[in-house]
Image (cartoon, rainbow over all chains, first blue to last red; front, side, top):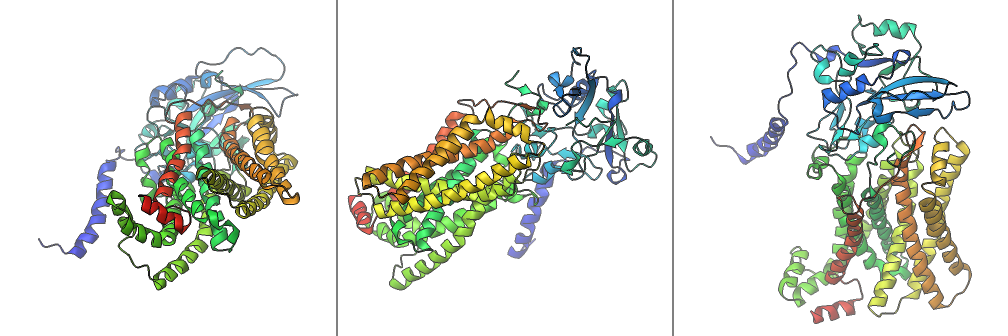
Length: 243
Length: 392
C-alpha cells in the first residue's frame, strides 16, 4: 500500500489521538445506566444526625481513604447566645470515632456532616489546568487520577475544604458520591451506613424521588450560598452559624 | 494538635502550597521587573540606565529559565506537566502558564537578546577557539551577516520586540497575580487588585535586583559604578515603589473598612502568625524603610559614597520585602481555615522535595545561570568583549 506524505501527515495525529484513548483504557461497564437520566445530589437532615461517625468509617473503608484525609467528615457545633458569630466547632479525626460528651449545658449542640457538594458550577473543575477533574453528565464531580498533575490548585479553589492530595497517589482526591455504586443502582456507602437516615442520596431528574416533596415542604439550604457554586448537597434545618 | 488553633476543616491542616510556590511569583517578578528596566533604555530612551541594559536582559533570562522549576518540582506528578501544553483546560488560569512562559521566553527575551548580541556572537564565533567556538557558531543560527544594513534591521526588529515585550512582561506577572486573585474561595487572595499589585511589586523587585547586581558586579570587576545610572534607577525604583505601596495599602484599607465575614479571621492572622513576616519584614523593613531611604536621596544632596550605600541597602531590603510579600500571599493564604474559625501552622521541612534546601538551591540557581550567560555574552562595553575574546 502506498501512503503519500500528505496522508501520513493526516494519519499521524489521528494515530496519536487513538493511542491516547488506548492508554486511557476502557471505562468500567455499567449496563442499563444512562448518565443523562440522572442528576445526583444529597440531602442531609441535620436534626437526624447523631454524630456516630458511621458514615466517615464506611466511606474510608469503601473508598480506601488514607488516614488523616477525609472524603466526608462530621462537625459538632456548639452555639451559645454569646458566640453565634464564632461557634465552637470540633471534628476530632473527622468525627470518625464519634465525639466526646458535651461538657456545657448552655447553648445548643448539633452535628453537621460534610462532603463534596458536587457543585454544578464548581470552582475546582474550573481551575484544573488539564481538565483532570470534571463534572459528569449525571452531576457528579470526579477526578481522573491517571491524568491529575497533583498541582493542588483545585484544593485551593474548593470553598468547602473537601479536597486533598492523596499522600500515596500524589493526586487530588475527594468524594465521588460512590460513583462505582450509584451507577449500579446502589446508594452511597455513607448513606447506607447512616443509622438514622440523616443522609439521603437523591436524583433530581427522577420525578419519583422523595427529594422533590422534601424540598417543597422543608427549609433547606446549601453551604456558603454566596459562593454561587451551584452546590447540590442540601441541608435541612441548618443553623445560620454553620460554615 | 498539629499546630492547629481553633477549628480547621480536617483536610486543611497541612498546607498544599509550600515555599516553592513562594519562589515562583518571586522569580517571575524578578524577570518581569528586570525586563521593564531594560525597556526603559530601549523604548523610553532613558540613556542613563544603558550600563544595565544588557545585564537586565541576561538577568531576566537567567531567572526565567529557573521560573518553572519550583512549579514542576511541586507537582505530585511532574512528568505529567507537558499535558498542560497538549491538553490545556480552557477555563483554567493555570493552564495558560506554559504558553505565557514560552511566549515570553522565546518570542521576547531570547529573541531580543539574540538580536542585541548578534554582532558580538558573530565576532566571537570567529575569534574564539575550541568548544566555545562551536557554541558561538550554533548561536549565530547560521547567519554571519553583520553588515550595516543587517544590523540596522536587527536594531529595528529588536525595538519592536521590546515594544511587544513590555505588555508581555505585564502579562507574565499580572497573570501570576490572577492565579491567586481569581480564587473566590480564598478571601486573602481574591481581589481584582492582585494582578496589578503583582505587576508593580514585580517591577520593584526586578529593578532593585538588577541595581544590586550591577553594583555588586561592578565591585567584583573593580570597575567604577556609573552613578548617573544608579541614581536614575534609584529614582525609578522610588516612584514605582510608592505606586506599589499605595496599591497594597489601598487593598489593606479596603479590607479593613469593608470588614467582611473573613475580616476577623484575617486580622487575627496578621496580628499573630503573620506579624513578623507581614508587618515587620514586608511593610516596615521591606517597604517603608527602603522608600524613606530612597526618598532621602531624592530630596537631599548626598555624597556619592552615601548614595551607593543607600542604594545597596535599600535594594537588598526591597528584595527581602518583596520575598516576604510573596510569602505572605502564598503561605498566609493557607494558614487560616475557610471556615474562618481557626488557623494552622506551616512547617517547612529541610531536605524534602519541597523543603528549605531545594528552595535555597532554586534561589541561587539563577545566579549560576547568570554567571554562565555573562561569561558567554559579556554585557559590558565592546572593548571589554574583545578583551574577553582575546583572553580566551
